[in-house]
Image (cartoon, rainbow, N blue to C red; front, side, top):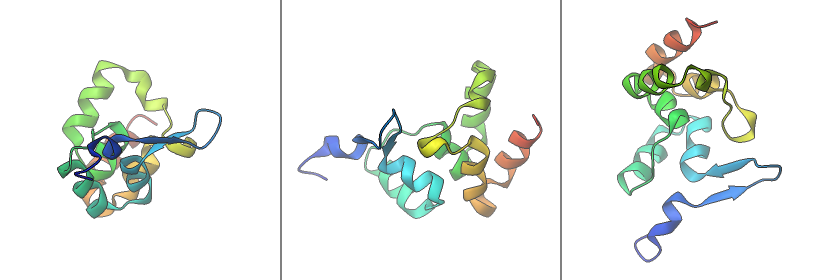
Amino acid sequence: MNNKPGLINAAWDWGNGDWETALGAAAHMGKRDIALYLLEKGARIDLFSAAMLGKLGIVKAIINDDPETLHLSGPHTIPLTAHAKAGGDHSIEVVQYLESFQ
């Protein structure tokens, strides 16, 4: 990636506006190690990857700023709560926080 640093944030459109980055894919698949590696290399964190990684402070800040983000879907229309659940033990607090709105 050093030769092409822009690739770290490249996105693919699967069709109909279903954009996905490598970080987005790692997030909905619960691949914490890959997500952390991508972030270390300069990927931009987003709400969905923050949820999977258990970054409750980031998730709360975004939702407090715009409560409608609770209803956004990530790549492949996967809901925010599913991203959080993909994080397993690392994201239990995020799951509990998100479920408190249901």
